[in-house]
Image (cartoon, rainbow, N blue to C red; front, side):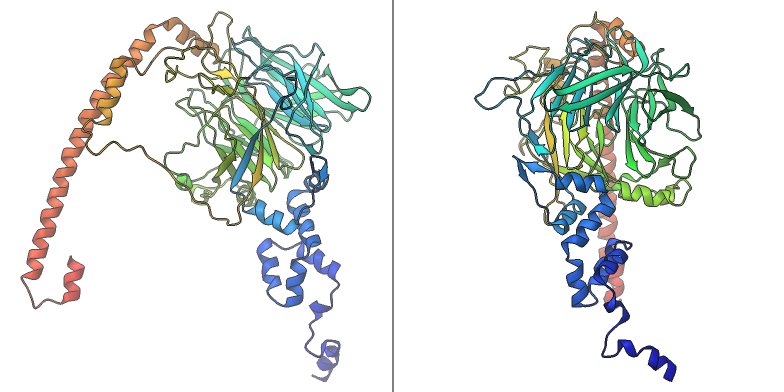
Length: 614
């Protein structure tokens, strides 16, 4: 006991060994702990509480959780030329409680000044942020024609409300849409696509962007030598960079018009002059699809989401491509839709998916199985994904992630619903740039830069059946789903309170109205106020487009006839269900009445027992 007392003598007077540790050593220990443990540590004493409020500690935590490149980009970020100072603890809290995005429509010419040179409206193009610049290439324009132009706009570290686009006269690559273009280092890697003859491509290009004080922005394209092995030609596929030397592609629409389900990896040489394609055959793997997304989420992991399947169904499955253990594997991530608000649909095609600050996957827009274009923002929780996959085995249905998805509120200039647009984030992960896409029918008059292929000022409610982007034919007419060209900037933000409130409004019929919804819809169809005209321009694969083209005007009448028959059946089923429900309700009321009569007729029964019986 004496020895023990002598050993503990340096910590007499109520002191503890941990209180004698230097502050920088404590910082190193805290950086190894999860966030909840750091807060528990702060509750032990005033000294540790003040330590956990240190701005330098929270900057280190931000670097740990978000990466050095994100923090360096935030430190260099400026607004109107003024450097920004961030309270790191508050910033961490805001990102942790992320519940909304703020959207701004970027100006394309100074107020009162001359209108600047602008890219044409387009869809299914590519948009990347590289070397401080936005780079836009190709896409499909009104009339189903491909584009072969390249545009750049310098953004740098200074937030600008005006984008000044410059056209690069390179002549290559050839015109196309539905291609993929990813950033690897300071270069762009472009693959595949479809031209306006319907021909699929499988060439690979390298784009080098440079910013000069004297010459401005330059961009040079060169064809990459990949040898004799390459993926089959395709368009409308998904692609992303895996690390500094590899590119991943999946799916798309091939030469036969069928959707593909193969996975390929491009391995680049150190100088990016050579490349080797390798097909990855694993089981299980995602089903064939097009119009989906691949997004790198760090740690040698990539997320695949959505798209359109072989039967033209729109998908909402989530797959993880994992190479962390040195082996290629696809893992399907199961989730429960219980936390999806009623009336909101998650399946989509032609959306965008980008990794933003805080390690979250932000999904915007696209269209659902009814071909309704969306303008909603969703966050996929990457932390849930990583916690599930740490076990090394695919998650079972019992371990499905119920909180995988969360919808964000949109503030500011709410963008219109669109699909097959393109989006990219700046190095900080705080700003998402959106350009182009397909929108519905007539545009708002204030959006003068948009295109409208259908002029019906006396009938603005008319809408034709929407289409998917995958194939085009010159003989087709114009489409009311038009490419859009208004650039939009979305900035992630959070409110002070982490809880989110949602409101839904429902149109209610007047109390004295005796017309059922079925009768209202039936009258609209018969009066010609609801239209079922077949599409005139189709970007789908050739088989579906040909089937619709051969139908001419007849499919519109057939659809109308089918809808009327369906309404008749639905009315009959509803009336039968109402009768059955009324009968069951009457029986239940009668049983309750009989029970009450029996209960009150026996006064000597226990009141508690009577209450239980009732």
